[in-house]
Amino acid sequence: MARYTEASCRLCRREGQKLFLKGERCYSAKCALEKKNYAPGQHGQSRKKMSEYGLQLREKQKAKRFYGLQETQFRNLFDKAARKAGITGENLLILLESRLDNVVFRLGFASSRKEARQLVVHGHFTVNGKKVDIPSYEVKAGDVIKVKEKSTNSPKFKEVKEMSISVPAWVTVDVEKLEGKVVALPRREEIDTPIAEHLIVELYSK
Image 1: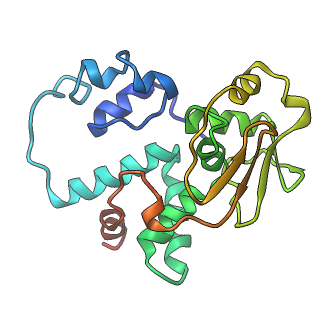
Image 2: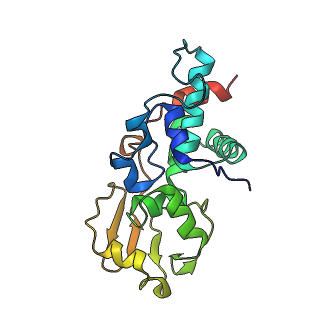
């Protein structure tokens, strides 16, 4: 599947806020949004009144970029959320958070979702003892995510062991063992990604 290969910082500038696509760089003065706090392109600094449709579209684009999904992937996930019982927007966010690449990021094993996706694809993780190299794999409550034994001595994971990691309430992590567990699927109030999911629902409901 095609991937966005241009400069990640352009995406943050387009959405007008940090999407934390480049890990530690996003927290430093090197962040492009700190230097150029306007949209990229020739007309990036011009101010235009956003229509209702424009607001909904931007919210959908922002959500896609936060989690690193392409349009078809995102739409399929939305359709799955719509079929579930409950509130569609909240279901969508829970499904996004339940992706293996996102869980690896939430556990602190990667500095960004992009890096987490690469680590998963390269086969560095197991789920319940079985190797999983599919970033979109949907984790369940009770699943144990662990760094493969052969990968624990890599510089990346040695660095992780030396870090102080803070994780959301719905997961736990044992840094020394390089192991994490999904205690429960997240509730809406436990998801801190700044997304107004109702706008996405309104967009796709037209």
